[in-house]
Length: 342
Image (cartoon, rainbow, N blue to C red; front, side, top):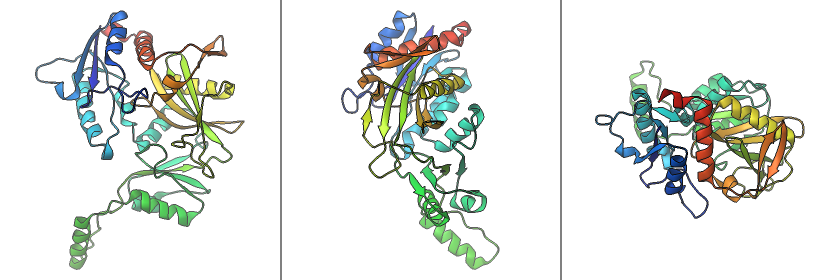
């Protein structure tokens, strides 16, 4: 069975917290897949040659990028779309890559694939400030406002009233352009009904604020194994992501694990990172990623959780991200009968 692993320009595949800026161990990945009888090829994105090579029915494992302004991620998207058009089998599927560093598309996926109470994390997305002014239907404050891209709660704001929301929307969407300004001034002098191009074109989302949370659970799932980190909120703040206040709880509310498993299975993926809030009664799905998420929970947690006979069990066996990625990918391929296509 053919398996292609694609590396970035740094020769990295995903990340590791073993040392700063580390990649997963490529030799371990290759050996792991060979042991379950895959024919493994490792290439850089730039080595994919659509004129010379045929990737039809090749299973492709790939990563994303988190470079400033996401320039390299945009390049990766081109390569992945080419592979998809040629008939390659992307893991995860392309739409889930599109949600990486793209909270607007993440919310679209949530709406389409998660049959949850829409009021739990009610959200609106906007492409410009002008659209926000025209179409926002905020009827209850406070709200949380986020840029579409970013991590560790960067630029995530809370608005307690309409004035604060308007100010946050302008700040998040701002895209100043001297060219647009000159074009606008010139056309206004013509007085022919010219509508200027917006200088607030960064997309963003407005989301319901969930009160009374002391933090959230970041749960990394590899197949049947659930690695859990609890992230406490920053001092005198509502944000947990990027707080650095992390711990590995032994006692996880059953509702949290059951809810995460339900969400994970609906997405039908081999692995995922899922952020869940829990107020003692209700679980809230905050964010989720299926590619290029951090491995801290897997590499540092002294235990993980597995469900057997509808009961959750804590397992203290140490493991590695490489082992779990191979195991989860192989299980996913078998469960989805992808090997039958090859």
